[in-house]
Length: 200
Image 1 (cartoon, rainbow, N blue to C red):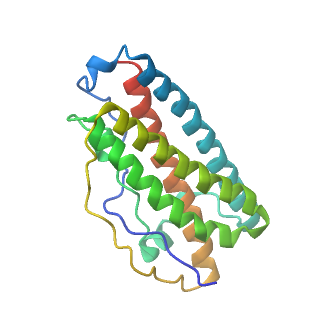
Image 2 (cartoon, rainbow, N blue to C red; image 1 turned 135 degrees about the vertical axis):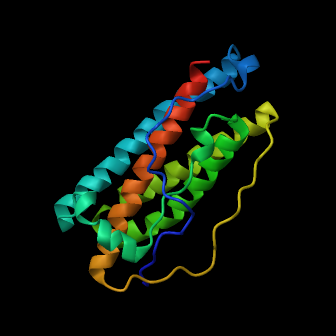
């Protein structure tokens, strides 16, 4: 099976977290169904983060790839980018845009986890569960957006053509390492956005 590289999505998300501002969906702050959705999916996101962390430990133990700062030069060669979530931590926070961007990122990581599956065939069950959970979280958000009558915001789509192959086994390993590291950062931002909405 051909090794694949994670989709390139845009600017890296390195900025420190800033407090979310404004009061989006203030009128729904007391809506029990909406609050139930938020709390259930906060727990679901926390569970997914734990599974990503478990895979990160496996990559560390299996390939001795544990620290990002030691791999940054290789990362530049690979061109792996972080799925953007700027709509979820900007001063002009809007729930519709944030939810749409979370769904777009989940679709991307669902696909890019295929590279991790190739690296860790002995742990296929965990990787496939993670893919299923990412798909289910995206579906949950889509359903809630429809229930609330929120518009789906479409962001410029990433290139969905054939992905470039890794040039070596080592690059594949480093690529898998950064896919998981990026996914973990993405989930942390999504978690904070959901938590912000739950506190309104």
